[in-house]
Length: 164
Image 1 (cartoon, rainbow, N blue to C red):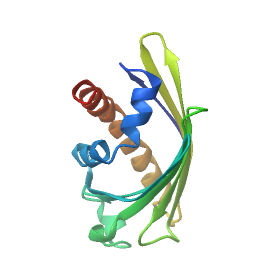
Image 2: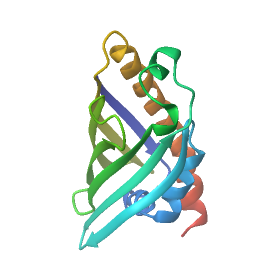
Image 3: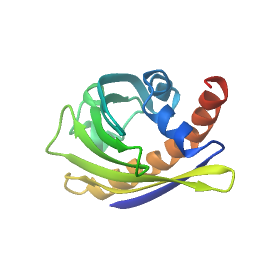
């Protein structure tokens, strides 16, 4: 399932990029709905490029149909990303720690100036390989991504305001 998310953050492009690659900010992502245990596994900077790997834990209660196929305590994944500060772009892949054969996902993000805000547009896809319920799970994931995207705006705004 394809998706597109737009975030307008009251900050400069550079401040948003800095926050999204700051281990302190990334730790606050555990405050997002249905997310917990955020852990920065790796971060490498080279010039205008940052590569990072961040592990997340899904904390919501999946449906009974999903629980028949997966253990909710094993719903963790690593988000591997490469950010290019010169181009103001980033590419992300979702790497499930478990059940890699059931989920695939990737997205690209671009940050541009939009008046007094930075606009971050993320476009990508998720695919759940589960007979009968896969499409419903994809819809739930995309809905959760939208919910987290909206909540992340408040986290970014607060972080940037308190971390000059």
